[in-house]
Image (cartoon, rainbow, N blue to C red; front, side, top):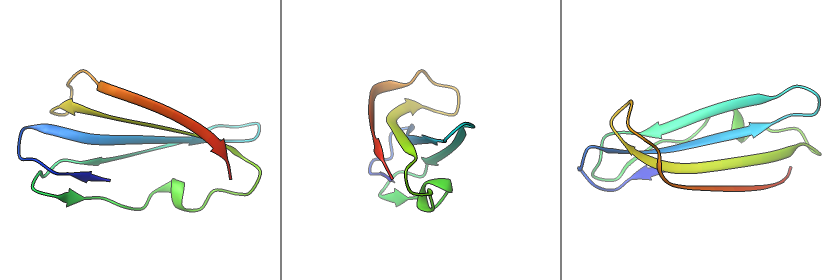
Length: 75
């Protein structure tokens, strides 16, 4: 995920999956000017798990999430 603009906003993503127990991982790109982040638990999810991905942006570390979008599928 990438933060394309130097505007104080952070691009954020959460990845949730689990069969019986839930694993949640967060990534955020904070540098602006096309700063990108990769990796996290979402890169190695066991087959058959339901996966929910939520993306949003917010102003600073404690800002209110804006333009939140959620989607799900199966690994």
